[in-house]
Image (cartoon, rainbow, N blue to C red; front, side, top):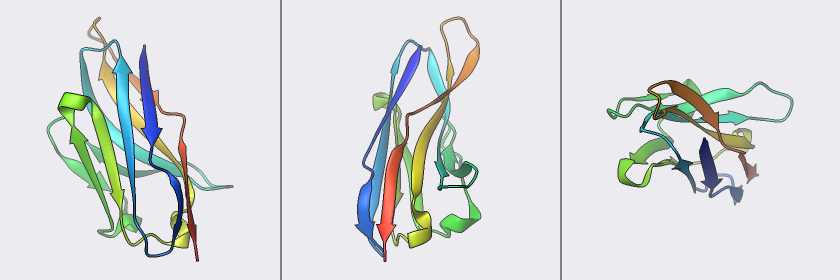
Length: 120
């Protein structure tokens, strides 16, 4: 089993910055893709950014160069640096990971979510 522990959410004014962290722990052979999703109230969950184990990144169009995803593979941790935050960035942010277990099979895992609230 794999656990994803997120931290770093909170309340910030528009234009401010936050850094989210997500640390993976448990029993696994390797971590493949790690990503951040978000879900605003009344909306569907959507991809924010993802990063492969090889370092390839993808961002949602709405990020527009404001967010940066990074990983520390030695710590099994993924980060999301969010700058120039907007009110519409308010959402619960979820960490996501694809991990290969000792069996050789890959599984998807979700964190519990961390609230990000941007005030005007």
